[in-house]
View 1 (spheres, rainbow, N blue to C red):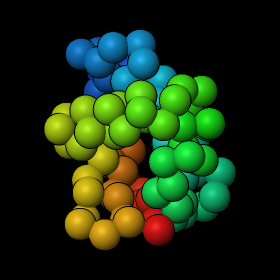
View 2: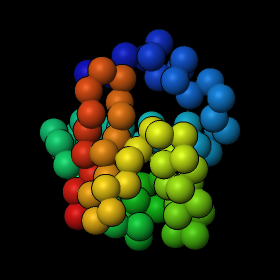
View 3: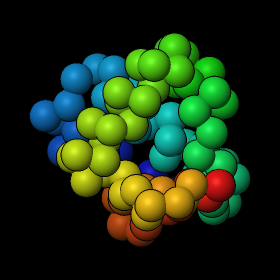
View 4: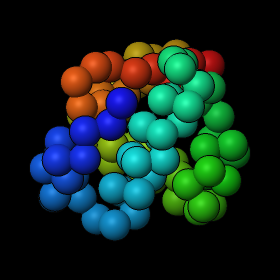
Length: 88
């Protein structure tokens, strides 16, 4: 379940690109019911940007502690009230 007010307050400082990418990642993890693969080609298509842009957005989301790189192909995504995972 998504909590729109939490998303809005948690992304108020983000650019439109950052918030959009973050929203797509949250939706993907909800749709899959859990882990998704951290595949730059796939995620860039989902986020409707180039792989280069996705890598930049991914790093900014990590820097903002919205997603967490676990030093593998696994990324934790902080989404509202629970942690969701990207899994490679």
